Image 1 (cartoon, rainbow, N blue to C red):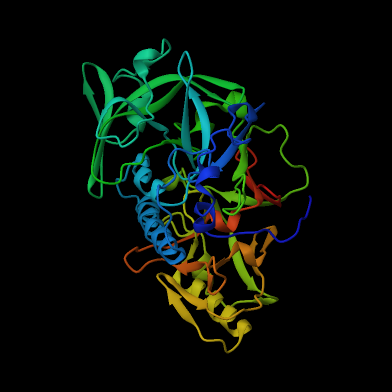
Image 2: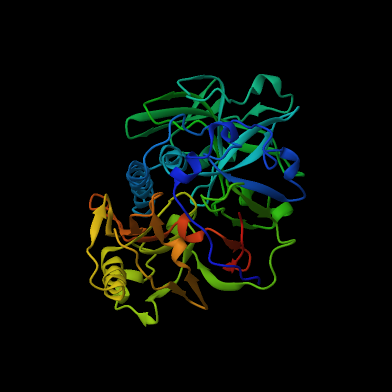
Length: 439
């Protein structure tokens, strides 16, 4: 397992402050689909030069932070509703996912193939794609189903029709409707071939969005990497054996490119593992056993109930690719924050939105270590500190679950995962973590 220098992490502003010339340089060396090979796909940030979804106007550093926090909150509300077993559809995270910094891969759909971007989501199963003729979809990049010879709608009698929320039948085809926030989505349940890198999965079942209302319907598709039957793992078991890994790039990287590696071949040999915990009532989520958190050399005093796994209530810790900043239940976060502040010393503390531990003077930060059953993961400061572009402000980039989210869930989020290889080995019920310079 290679170890590199402490990784660089910065905010979206640095990403957006790249010159307009380089942002519009469509021949970026890593934007070529040929870079996807074997069973490995490039992963890049939704705002990278390879993406058509980057914003037209840069935001200030503070506005970026506040926007990411607000969008994370919507994501956390979705995850909390999953944990509470409320009738929220898997596809409902679509709105929240685009509102958080999102990592996407290229997929080819149909015959002949049409290339689309799809966001990675480890907490969802069903894939969905905006389709041609969609009323209200914000994207000009849609899947033209009428141009694919392998496309077919699924009939109402198909078993998959029972695996989507609120199924409905018209003209004997299976459809479903969703309501979330101020938005609603109508989709047809369909099948077509999907190609990821060099691998083709025939007759892949996904939602083809036909109508959307509301202000926040996302522009790109979604690739569900959860543990349920409609996920990529569930539909490609003979090909990928329910095994995949990803390495998420740093926001600051000029290439913005990580990787998604599908199947057991070419996964790292030198990697630390912790068991995956299965929750039958919340089968999509990747629960792990977080037993303690260390700040510097001190294990902080967290009540055991704050970290305990409970399949009845949904309490515990999940690994999630769609949330940006790690959220801990209040007793756990408070213990981490207080020890972090103690280690920094008497510097004046300010806040920024949901971050309550910010400094406007240079600080020497301790490390933070997540202690899982069977392995420890020590984060370098750049994986939990946000620095303003001018270097004048530094914030601890973790928070307690928002007050209006009745959550018993600890969420290990994408910023804390960056520049690590995260391996999901479902057949052996384990998750691996290894340091890797992804960017």
